[in-house]
Image 1 (tube, helix red, strand yellow):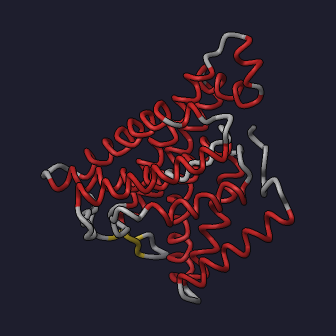
Image 2 (tube, one colour):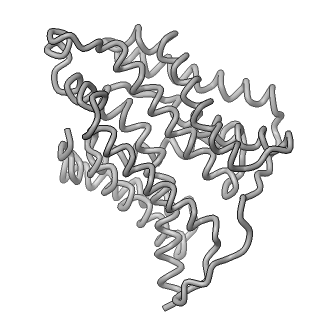
Image 3 (cartoon, helix red, strand yellow):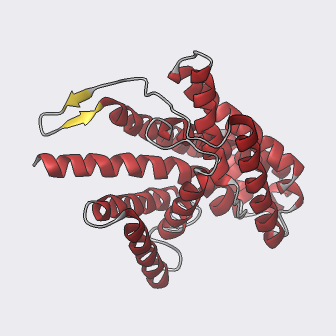
Length: 285
């Protein structure tokens, strides 16, 4: 009973992380049709922001608040300087964002060095859940991820900004015809996706090895989540996170992490082959 409960909670922790990282990517890739290979670096930036704040004597919570702000600002600069000129040139976007990811990695190396950076969790100890004893911080992470997803759904479905974004996604020319500033909507959406990735990086920092190259692994898993679940679908994003995160957690108990990753990739290929639009593709387009 305890083993099953811990396994489920571990899966929920990984699902929460993938959900946040994938949520940011879903905005740029699934909604804006921009293949951003620098998305993993927004996760890294969020983690390094928390580390930097703690290294100056600040609290984890202040660093966590700063992480999405820094990630969003970097995303805003990237969209203004590069992405906005390449919306109609997808191959150029891939090459440009790949180069930007390398630049950001090297910049972080120059600024912070090569070694792993320690980040202390804000809460130590465990919580007795009757069926299992589980680390308190991981439960907080799951709760913050759930709250963030709820806030994003409300933003998209209940605000004028969300209405503008959905209109631009469905028909950009028509949106421009009714007076919506599509360029501004895209810029805000891209920065918002980068901010969510920064939040994910800040949350995962106490659980991960904080390195300039840490974003690469999260980028690959985020693409799995978005493609398997269905690009452009929040429900699909959740389904993809459950599929990838749950399967990875289960396999990690049985085999090595590298083999588990390979099997998850194989399973993702099979799903996409059987359902090209993803598990729930288009449900919230």
